[in-house]
Amino acid sequence: MIDKSFKDHSVASVVTAASFGFVVVQLDVTIVNVALPAIARSLGAGISELQWVVDAYSLVFAVLLLTAGVVGDHFGSRRAYLAGFWVFALASLGCGLSTDATTLIIARALQGIGAALLVPSSLSILNHASGHDRALRARMVGLWTAAGGVSIAAGPIVGGLLLGWFGWRTIFLVNLPICAFAMILTMKVTPKAEVPERQRSLDPVGQVLAILALTGLVGAVIEARPLGLTHPLVLGGFAMAVLSGIGFIMVEHRSKAPMLPLEFFSRPNFTPATLFGIVANMTYYGVIFVLSLYLQQVKGWSPAISGLAFLPLTGGFIISNMISGAVVARWGSRPPMVIGGLIGAIGFALLATLNEHSNYLAMLAPFILIPGGMGLGVPAMTTAILGSVERQSSGVASAVLNTARQAAGAIGVALFGALAGGDQIVSGLRLSAMISVVLVLFGAVLAAVGMHAHKAEGAQKA
Image (cartoon, rainbow, N blue to C red; front, side):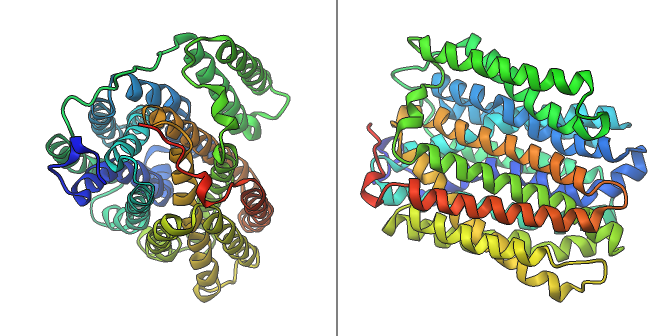
């Protein structure tokens, strides 16, 4: 049954309000990919700068998710959620007004701050609303994820149309009315005084170390191709990641009130679900980046046509997410994660057969199978994470999952983008697809072996 503090509002209205945060976050992934060639022409950006247009957002989003999760658990998810919309809207305005690549990259980084506040707090709102009802939580997460799938699907189409009619700046300005409506709805349907009785420690030392570790890792991977693996900045980034990561673990292990209790990773399902999320994001977002280059620079398709071509690849998530919520509610998280991983692996394998002469019919099967499989697994892993911790820890728990996923997505874009650099787009796409097959099969095996049975889920306490 829905939590009593939400009793005056239907499940649908709460899910709708909580889903808008995920919608704008996901929209600004796919909509930007379609616009990359236009941005390059307008601002004179090279491949490295284009990667940073994508990765500045993903990097800041990833490194601040843990902090945002702690902030939500400390001050209340409603407050963090509304603050996220304000930051995201203002940053989107800055993106739309950018006059050079550097300004756009900075504004994209600010968007990442807003996105970091939105995602864990939106899941925390859902988790609180579902109360102790595990099946209801699974269905709500499935709907939340499906809403993100709608925005992923709409991104290339809306982006292509806006590019053709009004120019690339409007792909960012469209966020302003979305954020305004979402804030109004959230204030109407969520409790005003939703602050946890037991507030989580902000743990500033742990937060700084986590930010340094993630920044060093993702930044070094992004710059490894243009600068080289032996460049001092790249080596320094990896060194900072290792040292800060070790420091973070030591601080959290010794702290009486850690922002991230390390014992979460010993909870049933927490670690395998997180690793599955890493695999899903690294493969999907990395391949999407390369495909955007393939469709427009190899096939010579316009942004609008490319956006329509992406529709099965992005829209397939909507149906599979909805199915996943129902399956998880009845049979638990393991079956959809295993089956989804196997389906996704087949899709990536078919993608590896494409070449410069491939027609759209050859692309259609992998464009359907990849989101069909990944879409089964993502709501399942999210539900497993939320079900493995107490409700008052749902913000930081979902932040751990999404931190791992976003860092993996940024690394995927950097690695696969490096493989497809210069005139190597086709060979880079095929190699990226084969790497994805191996990773996704690993995720499926991990879920089969590591995920506990249906009754092991739902360890939440009020």
